[in-house]
Length: 322
Image 1: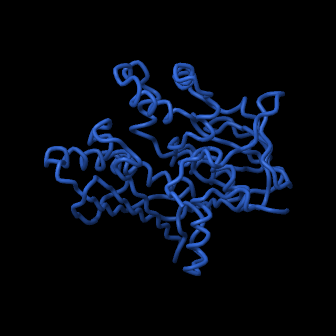
Image 2 (image 1 turned 180 degrees about the vertical axis):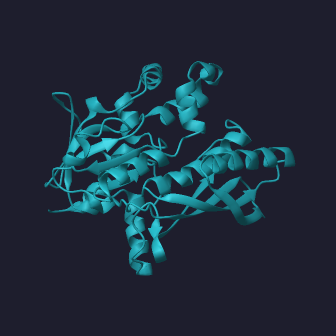
């Protein structure tokens, strides 16, 4: 295997630097696996970067702030337990909106069997929500990004590009959002794929790879390839894309496959599983196969029988400017 650095976005390159500076063996997956199988993860939503106020309701924002963090635990097939919530409050957020924000967080946390146990409040120029999750490794094992092997099948849950389609509607045709319930739900109320990840880890007993596609499918494929020192052949024709997403992409003059690869915020799972563990998995299988892991250092894309442009990681959503 040769140069795996080509699979790094600027953000991931910075993460690698932080890992070196801290000399930490725990950095590199969606959660840190620490003492006795405890999982720890944190994520932040910042107004203007991750959401536009008031294009999202306080209740939906509360749900989303919890869901995106639980998705990190799902990405390791773990079981989330406790939550810490820290909020920076701007002067324009009143007490009614603040309560609705918390009601959304409580609704999501109860839905997935977790509990808010503390946090912090401070003031600032824009609304910012940081959530820390403590969870536990699943009793059947833990799925990391580094577990893919040549010959494994690449599998995904759900629909890709839907959140990007929902964002386009909010920004360009907000009067039509009631006509597109699936993509709007994907954007403002994502579902962490916990049950799906538990099905996979029970099936594999921890043999495989997994992460979520919060920064886009392209990023997820690249991160698994880099961590596992493998390549992939991907058929984008097999990628699940919601009919609403295709319709909205046509309105926007965009390629729905491009939204699926680079749009981000889909919070679907991307995994690799031995073919022997997948071939007779029918009854409760929530995944679709989109490709195969190879022993190369390339991610080759096609759409059916046609070649597709190479991945361009500069098109992925990134948190940093330098």
